[in-house]
Length: 84
Image (tube, rainbow, N blue to C red; front, side, top):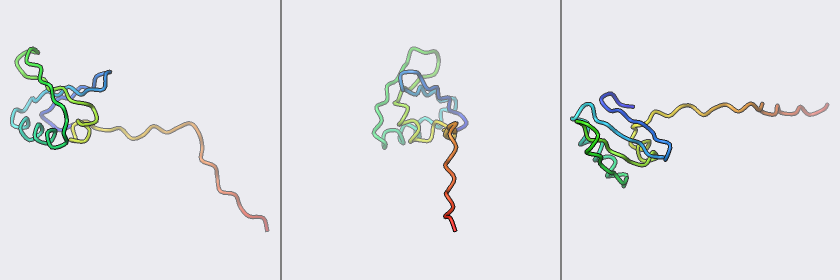
């Protein structure tokens, strides 16, 4: 997540974005618009507006740090050696 932006992923598949650094709002909203993300604005949440977008769009815009994929408990099959 970039500095100056708080992003919270909700259980319903949305990302709620808060711009701590207001200078980042224009470029990020422009990137989300270019992606075609539906952005809703919550103006009732205190002194800063909150922006709600689909989680996938926030990830495409680089707002969500992705964790490396979890390793499964299964081991890969080792290659077989030919006899002889």
